[in-house]
Image 1 (spheres, rainbow, N blue to C red):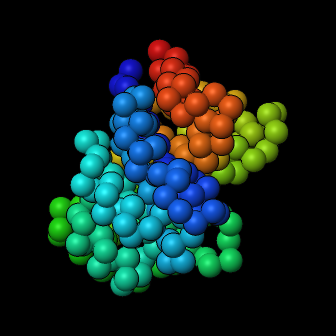
Image 2 (tube, rainbow, N blue to C red; image 1 turned 90 degrees about the vertical axis):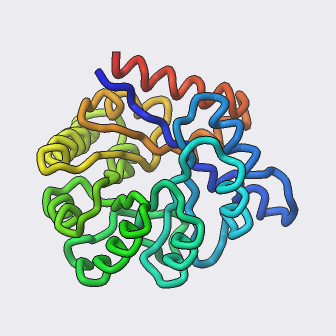
Length: 243
């Protein structure tokens, strides 16, 4: 079975830094450590309100990373200009609301098709790989395909938030079905949001997924076991699921 890539999101290293207002802890240092520990890429979400990752962080990530950068952003003109200036390996377009604590669900690509189309086109024309962060629904997958985005990322939050049991299994089946449909219509399929040690293996075992993006859990667990060890354990769990 093909190796599943791990993208490590460093947003919440920046959240801790910004709580005090200073240079420490440094999300770019965390990104470099993650790559050394086995991450295949780094994800960072530059939000409108700059609540965690900053413009300077993106500058440094682009300059210092040896692995691909996946820039998460809302579909706004401000963010488009930033993405086109830096030209990261990939851009994942996500929904964004000022009042939310974190991304609360997938982007409604089907309803927002006309708004999103020029963003996907301009990013793609610049050689940036575009991904749409969506719920595990055929309607959203088909809409992403029609936009010309080559990649989708399935929102795993609902699966992670329910206790182990029948309801979680129903959410897992939705992810399995969506990932299979994505590949069937010619999309590369990723997944992420809320994954931890106790939830990652069933998702990682979905053969039609190419990448998982994980951040908050890794940053939180690193307080207890260290960032390198946390990433290495997550990597091992993903590999076990694929074996």
